[in-house]
Length: 128
Length: 112
Image: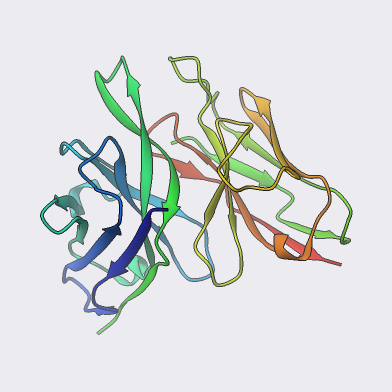
């Protein structure tokens, strides 16, 4: 069974950068899967942030795209999320997840599928 | 963006009775590869979401067979044949056919 664990600061100041890491075990992230981030503001629904393939293909939600960076660290078997210029609206539980892949002829590249394994989530509060 | 609309938003159910949740998308979820990438997730209180169903009707590993999914195009349904206490939580539909991926607003299943 794939296990994912988020880590990072629980409190970030407005205008600063939110940085989270997701450690994966015992499954290797250097495999034909996407690794994604999804968030959930307190008491609200789910929002897909973005996903990265093992070879580096990355897709992000356009509503956040200019502020989001997702990267892989295969040496540590983990992947990361950076979200810049945060505001109170970015306060949420952040989940990392494994997502399958399917090939899209129109895009000419693999695309993420539904998230099948999730981390427990970590609450990040944006406040001064 | 594809808007996913779930009904009802709250569903009180008697233990042992069936439950049904609907999800409607603002556009067809049929992908150019012929598949329909509509999933259902369950979020128990205080827990992360858990994948139940993918591609409309395929149960994920370990999901009890009392859960079933159906539908096509823009209209989809999750059914629980006999509700058990452990089924309490919020259920979300999700589409991964078109970017950005989007979720329904959630349906809260509670016991009467």
